[in-house]
Image 1 (tube, rainbow, N blue to C red):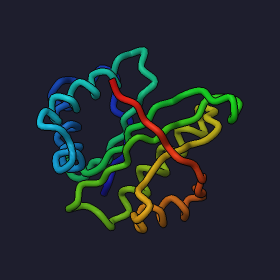
Image 2 (cartoon, one colour):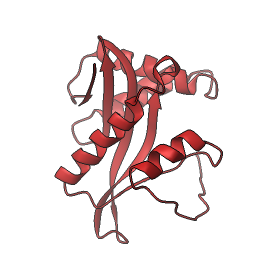
Image 3 (cartoon, one colour):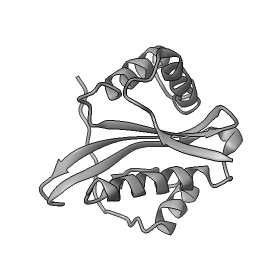
Image 4 (tube, rainbow, N blue to C red):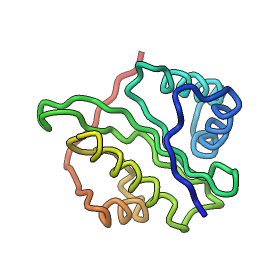
Length: 151
């Protein structure tokens, strides 16, 4: 059985390492050489008391198998708070078991209870499985061109 829950802001370093190790499966092939240190810094920032970031994890038999990482932000367009879903990740050995759907449904339920006005995310244009999941839960395409800038 898979249990989904939000990571407490006061979780210990060992649990933070478990979360980082899970996300390593997603970032290691594409991230910088210091990706683990970057993950630990990001998790620390996300779990600060004043942070608007949240981490939900899926756990199966004491093993973290998936996670959702998102930020709550304000939008003039939406007339209030919305979620930017940064990452929805399930370890490759646990895919096609409904874990991503369960995580996303948990995020949606949490957002509704918090009065959040919407959820936005980005996925690869060729990622058919992920697009199918999002569409099955009522997400729709937003035509736009995303830009970025780094210091």
